[in-house]
Length: 79
Image (cartoon, rainbow, N blue to C red; front, side):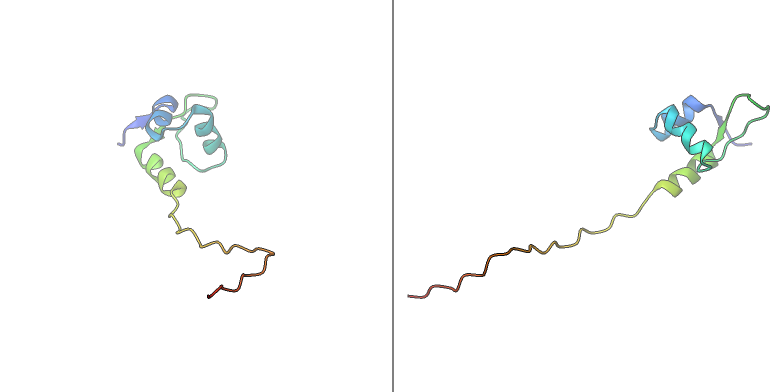
């Protein structure tokens, strides 16, 4: 059987607040175990790993920005 984490332990392990953890649970982003209605909520290590995988996004390189100006380009001065 996997180790079960309390709300406080799970939030600490993920580095998020209890409010954020509860919001993720209510939105269905993280799986949990609740043996009795209105009872304590527990999280499995596998559930925490799934949540991390869902919330991890791949970094994209920044696109070059083209600068648009209203000025005309100066002709190069050659002497």
